[in-house]
Image (tube, rainbow, N blue to C red; front, side):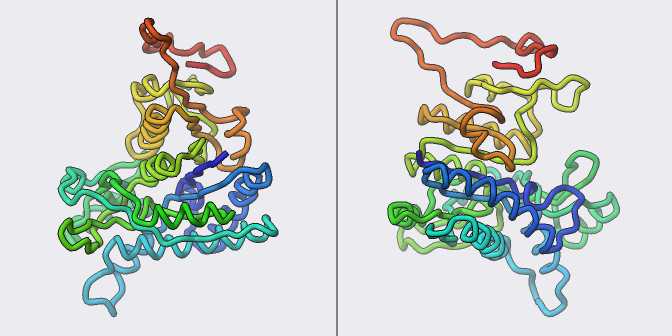
Length: 331
């Protein structure tokens, strides 16, 4: 099978952790073990990853650097995170996959310069901010911030991906037998002049799950794995009795009320891929990628085939969608 696996940026640097290199290397070590199992099982693998915590850290450092007349733009900082996370993943995978080539590819993602996301920044980057820090950043640097759980974080525009510039190179690398790390952080966001073809970086961070879904579709992948720090998608998340979903249709997944800054884009990307291609999408734990592929963990997303002459099944709504007494609910 050809698999695109998307790693969450928070899975490589978890909430509240110190952003030291050693901390991220530890998480990459664990992620590489899980990803290597897919390759050792005989599958082709393309890896993409988030960069929210990492690009936020670099942005804060750039903002406070006294040697800079202006901070580095987000597209350049995104390229830096591709190199940083890409080399950590590549070194770990090479050690676990003797005889396999591993290539980290600098990748650009084209976006629409008129995407409404530029007027409504809602993508979280960076670490937690106190109310005072957030107010100071908004006044001094023009940041926008929003509440992520109990804390405030910086938000930036997250336009939809339209095309992946290096798609042909990814195909060539896969055909040569390489494991490919591509489109990290959702890809370096660029716009392209329709007359000259020239690319220009933009101040944004593309959502890595949506880019992963686009990449998987354009590569004719058999499966999209969205790997994160939770085992399943949950209904009634945060309630006393959340319901873990083991199997769900794209329509039902779109209907769930999920957190906008975390699970919702994952769910929408998985649902869109399964709906458009008819292939498998899974949202599951980073430490068990092979289990997610095999269906022993995670939330499997499959489109229901509609028999000729029959109407599609209507899924239940609200609390009746799962049995809270059951260990796992299937929707």
